[in-house]
Amino acid sequence: MPWKEVSVMSSRREFVQLAAQPQANIAQLCRRFGISRNTGHKLLKRYRVEGQAALADRSRRPHHSPARTAAAIEKRVVELRQQVHWGGRKLRRRLRDMGFSEVPAASTISDILRRHGLIERGEADQHRAWQRFEYAEPNQLWQMDFKGHFATQHGRCHPLTILDDHSRFCVSLSACANERASTVQHSLTQSFRRYGLPERMLMDNGAPWGSDVRYTMTVLTVWLIRLGIRPCHGRPYHPQTQGKDERFHRSLQAELLRHRHFKDLVHCQREFDPWREIYNFERPHEALQLEVPAKRYRASPRDFPERLPPIEYAAHDEVRLVRARGDIFFKGFRLPICRALCDLPVALRPTSIDGQWQVYFCHHHITTLDLRGAVK
Image (cartoon, rainbow, N blue to C red; front, side, top):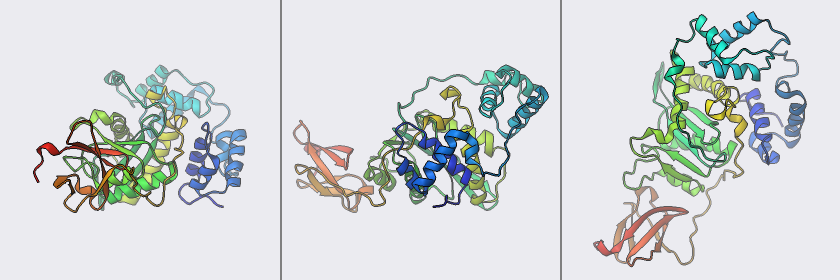
């Protein structure tokens, strides 16, 4: 079975990186990448022996010479910096990963960049270390947000970014025509099919995932809940909650979008894909001790269901159907719940306080109702 036509090298690279992770399910990954098990195991066997060369076509010549002079290394530093907006530490790590045996110190590389006018003196002093928090394992939390939209020659592009919290692995970078729920759901479906389902997803409070002011539930978050994913939202007007995704947006702006002009969405996506590959597999990350995100990421064992699972509750739950207005009838009261749950069942469970009930949709707690002050 052949590889799918997207980017053969990119798909091969992602496959072997994910398959090399501990406890990786090779058969599952082969199915998600659309290849046979024989093809997957053959590529892995070649990769263990030949390394990155196994991913290229057999006739492709090596990228690097076995020996370089000091002048050649300096030239390569300059060329690499012109391709990517990285500093001395990242460039040094990248040169080592590329196979250079004699790599200058990070400070020497920074001096080379200054001599060629590629960075200003004192630029490093502008960057300060932050106290970081991250989840312990991949796929425990994905952060999702739209980067600010920008104009193309034929419309506007709304970049949708999805980042794994633990590894900083960019799960998706999509050039979208709008910020509608259906657009986001389509992009998420593609990511879920390839990488599996996360446990939680973090979003801000804006549309299309947080437009309901009272309950912060939309059609999109309802869909996520039915998939077994817990949606959560950052504090209003507090973008630091999604700091990793915000930092990713800065890198995207500095390394790709700045001073660039795009024809249309197809052109945007054509530029997004190779930059995402560099970010995941080549660009050293300061927060990861200069490892690349792909080294710490592995695919989720939870498969994406092509059909939504049925909504089931316990036998002792009080189940009510949410009406078109977003409310339910319960014990003679009409009680507001959420318009996004229209025509879907919710479960009510009594608390230890008389007259108070907890309301759940699937596994997700929605609100607490107090019938003592309700009006019939």
